[in-house]
Image (tube, chains in turn purple, blue):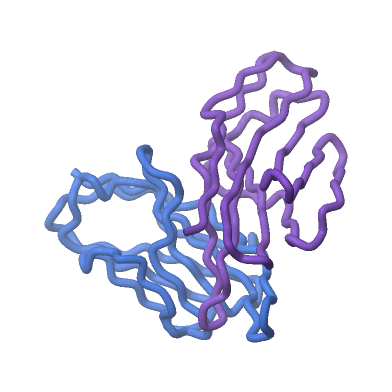
Length: 117
Length: 117
């Protein structure tokens, strides 16, 4: 069965510090997708990034960067120069195979990130 | 209009009540999903609809009854719920293609915070 593990339940840092959120996954599929979502206090899950299993290039988007390493089954997320607005729960997710045209996402437990002023 | 809307945002109901949650997506997607997020468990997929047909029922109790009248609307009918059903219920949509291996990103609504007394 597919599984996503986010070992860090809570992280608290001071503003402007860099912080890395870890994500480790398990799958037997050769083709899969990985995602990161942000959930602010309002509750909505906000899509951040999607990565195809064949694309191991790291990605940077502003202060956000992602490190995908197939060899260690990890897809870590780094926020550089953190800001208070980054405070949220962050979820890593893995797609299962498409079944009858619909995908299934398996989520990790989430990491609650608090950025203190 | 935001991509995926959900109503109501908050709902308190007794165990004998019957209520419905509504989800509407304005993204032109063909697949819709219900997820449950409770304090003790990670996000759990409940139901998947693709092209208005239910393709997945993730062992959800019959007191939860989904309805998908068209590809833009999704309902979750609730009856005789239990206090342990109190949770955040999230709706999502995606454009899933019959081409093998194609996956689109799931976009989430803000959720309905349900409390069962």
